[in-house]
Length: 305
Image 1 (cartoon, one colour):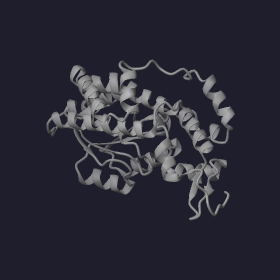
Image 2 (image 1 turned 180 degrees about the vertical axis):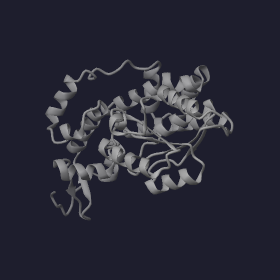
Image 3 (image 1 turned 60 degrees about the vertical axis):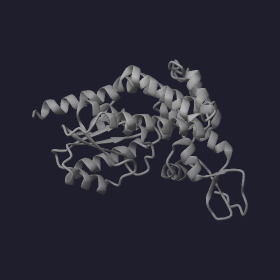
């Protein structure tokens, strides 16, 4: 790593984490393990990432979203990554969701009020669970692809996330309090910054009568264990984005499973764990929102009132 007394042509690690969705710890591990990224140092000795490296990290993030492993792609050149994207069966973007051009324009011009109104109208027409599955899931994918292609700024992506949070929080609150079963504790492990998956899961479970408690993101394992065992929790559910290292997810889940009482179920969902079921005995890996409803039904069948 080069040491510079003065360097302004780059961004700090916190900004890279925010802009790419790749956790700071992941970037540091890759730096040691694969020799990339190769940040410079500013006058204070802090990591600074040149624009070209951030662009490459965006390509890596896109390939991670398609299921490739860091060991295959992090050390590859930018040209090799571009070739992998071109050769990928998922290289062609999925069909844009209904009204995409209008919604994208709202995000590009930072019109949060208009975006929220559009989302709210879709919610009212479809109902909460259909809105999640048929609108929000493809829309969130489209937003991520637009960001990766440079069609949407980081600010636009953050605006989308914030307005979705606003709409879903209101929809969950309108369901009223649910004291039914199971009681589900929702959270993420440390270094998992993405909260939208948690909120979407809560919005899917709430209409089914489950009692959901969210701890938000980045909860230490000891705190998850304490909240679950002391709070009368039936199910601990964790969300993992594509940027979260699968091996780290498996290790954390295995540790948490061993620490939780056998009577507390452990569910995990998201890109990082989708293909990890065989490595996670005793843990229910949830493929998508519909599979979450199936997991709920399975739990209730095994625990009749």
